[in-house]
Amino acid sequence: MNTLEELKGKNPFRMPEGYIEDFTRNMIDQLPKKTFEEPAKISWKDRILPWVYLAAAIAGLGLFFNVLNRNGESKSTAKDNYILSSEAPDRAASDDTEEADDYLDYLETQYTNYLLAEELGKLE
Amino acid sequence: MRQYTEDELVERLREPSTVQNAFAQVVNMYSERLYWQIRKMVLSHDDANDLLQNTFMKAWMNIEYFRGDAKLSTWLYKIAINECITFLNRQRASHQVSMNDADVFLLEKLKSDEYFDGDELQLKLQKAIVRLPDKQRLVFNMKYYDEMKYDDMSEILGTSVGALKASYHHAVKKIEEFLAKEV
Image (cartoon, rainbow over all chains, first blue to last red; front, top):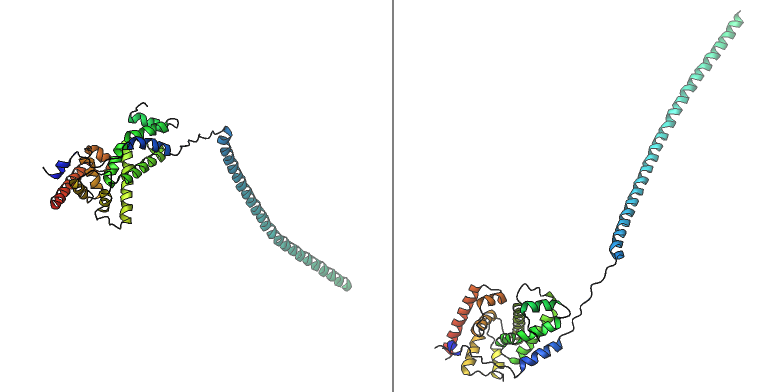
């Protein structure tokens, strides 16, 4: 028989008298107290308010972008108007010049006719 | 105190009102088994006592995380084995012993341990066993001393039954060779 077979089932170790019985008692005494927290009660306000805040934030953002867009539109209208008004004076000035030229031509013709009529009167 | 089954204990461990009593029963049920498991790894009674306390303290502090997927005994064994391995690694570091060398320093304590009743032959056997790597030593102790089933060992150690059988077979061979040389 080899050594392992010879020694099988034999425990060379031992423990002190009453060790295990004392161990259980001592172990339980050593354990720190477990605290179990009650789950916090959530009121209806706590459930709904976050959603209200979220809705208000979204509405606020929407309003902000809306205002930004409107300001953008009015600026482009004014710009268009400015473009229109800057073109108009040029057209009015050229009309006036033509009229003046026409009137001058008319006056010159009248004066020439007057002078001619005078000359013709002297000859008779 | 009424004795509960393991399933009943697990249920009672989940309830704040019964957790303390249930844990006391757990300590009562498993302390001796775990003690011997630890003792055969670290050899000294004083060290085994410390590690056993650490094991149950860890179990207590983490009891709410025990989901019940594995058996309660398996969970406790795993904690105990982790405590042993950590302890042995620390001892090796303090004795400047490399992982590949035997834990011969454990035998020095054993020689003067008043709770070791073994003769010269028993001492030689322990000398052979401490030369095994940690996991192989665990396998050997569980099979040779506790006659644990390979399936149960597999659950605790997370190793296949085949690998455990091979490990035990090799452990026996190494020990027999060592003892033959020593005689």
